[in-house]
Length: 112
Image 1 (cartoon, rainbow, N blue to C red):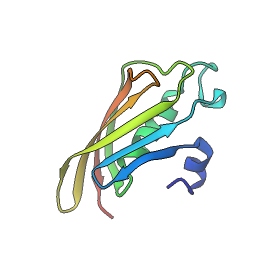
Image 2: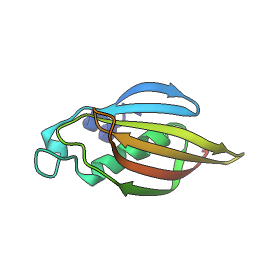
Image 3: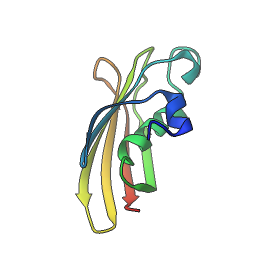
């Protein structure tokens, strides 16, 4: 995944990669922000999607933005809630460097 052009450009790094437990980190960069301070919501959604879709394709995703990562790396932790024959249900939480929640996503993936 990190070799795809968009993910490579974002600069994500996998901290843990297991079938049902993935953690990725996005180092803070000014060019990924709205104003040089806070990550753009689309960047956060992209990292949430990447964390959850490590082995599947996205069918649906809902994101709730509950905070902001102020000049901080973004860390996303994805956990599988239920794995079926063709569908995987995940929850992903994005936090800042202090561990404060920035966004939460619920996703459904189809195994391809």
